Image (tube, rainbow, N blue to C red):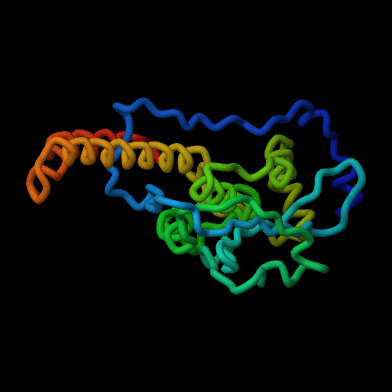
Length: 248
């Protein structure tokens, strides 16, 4: 299998670049803030976010490596598998790799907890939807980093998947490498990382806008006027209708 991989022409992937994800959404397209996609935390960042990385298989010269990644928030690991998002102590998902994890990188501090991140993303990574190429552990980590820190997973950790998707008959190719075990999962057909990131960004932006609007009312109204503290009902309904139009 390694010989087949080494002989594969890379000419089809010369100049391959990670596709840019357009996450800017006009304010009139933004959605209802009452949505689990919206990061809920605020205030001073208190949750440490780390990225755990392990190379998969034997390194072949001139061929990008495949990687297994997971996200660690406050020493609890979150990893996407065929069982959905699995939570572990330490970096248990890397134990099957030699000296895994090979690297653990501090990514930053977040005001969003691991539990809040999981609540916002788990419906997008349901059990039985895992696909080795199109919806794998790296896909989840990419979304989790964006949810927690507005950062993306470095493209070098997903380059092999992207490269194989550009090679003709890549499915048959990967089946050979996996000794016939890989089969495309039809439940991953509609999955798209870019759409999830756009949804997070849109809903989060509206959450901020709704809070600002509500705070503005509180400044104008007298303390204790509960009815006036609530955002305008018609405005909320309009925003809710707009988010329903965002494809996902």
